[in-house]
Picture 1: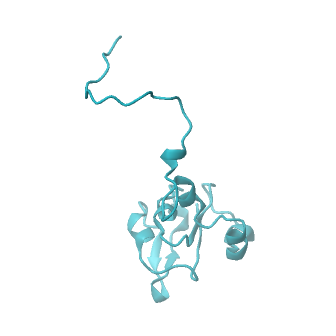
Picture 2: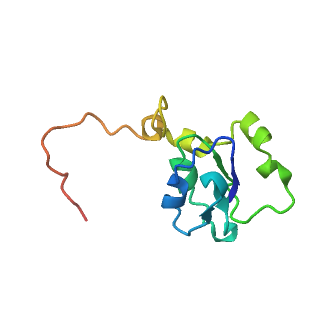
Length: 122
């Protein structure tokens, strides 16, 4: 669930507002998004993934954490590398390796240029 919008880092680009499927944000003073409907957050991480300056923290929990100052402590989150950590893990942003290039899985073998799909067996 979205827990923090850093007013210090935010550049008021509105990308988080635009991508949020549940309309969690409202435009606040100086254009900085406010968490107007936090309880509607689906923990989809789209806002954090699209923030170009890592100004958001989305907790992996699906409910707001009442009375837990650690999830709203900007300096603490930044110090632990959690601001924008989802975006970093998927490799979005300048100088980052896309997550798909770091994925671990079975070797698919060399690519063939034939353009035909393997036969379907049942």
